[in-house]
Amino acid sequence: MRFNLHKTYFVVQSTFMTEDKYKQDLQEIKEIMSRSSRFISLSGLAGIFAGVFALVGAYAAFKTVYVSNEFSSYSRVIITTDHLTTLLLIALLTIVASISTGIYFTTRQAKKQNQKIWDLQTRRLLINLAIPLVTGGLLCLTLLLQGYVGIISPLTLIFYGLALVNASKYTLGEIRSLGLAQIILGLIAMQFIGYGLIFWAIGFGLLHIIYGAVMQMRYKS
Image 1 (cartoon, rainbow, N blue to C red):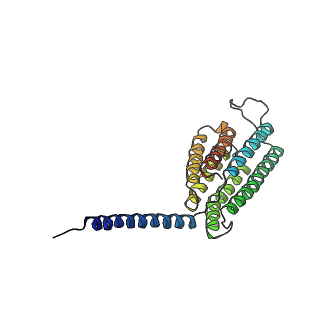
Image 2 (cartoon, rainbow, N blue to C red):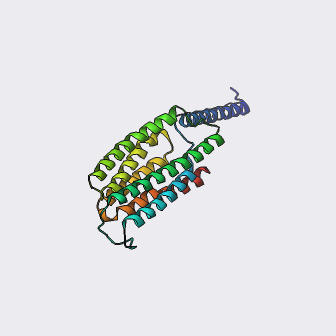
Image 3 (cartoon, one colour):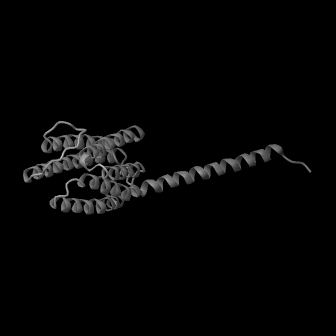
């Protein structure tokens, strides 16, 4: 019995090439399905700007409430009605500035990737993000009006982290890591009530800047 070694080698090689092609095709299909099921047009610059705005807002809040310039010392303060109004205005301006820049950079990123800015995944992302945020916001506002000022900062970090984790399944994995970091920081801040503003600046300021820088380097976004 004779064997055509050359033909046998060619068949085996073709088989391996076919298997590699199938694997490659399956990988491409998985990537397409993953992209279609997630909102991936997040911008690292949006995170950086949000962090910068948060630091500016934290500094403005500090100058509004604290008389002393000692950041590292515990200070007992009394929040007057005027202080409360100013703090709410600072928070509102910070949120508006962050959302505005976020929309701008996210829209620009979506255009670069030839993706729709508003589709099913965007709606799912926003709904899952909004549920913990709105719940936490209403709870914090209620506690603030009742005079429980000290726990507001930790609670905002915790609920914001929960919102990010809840929405992370519809977007990039880095969002989940940022959310977990916010939750942990908020739980730590609950043990140091007098330093809530510093923890707030770290969570919404520094962590956002670090997250944005990582996104910018990893995805060039």
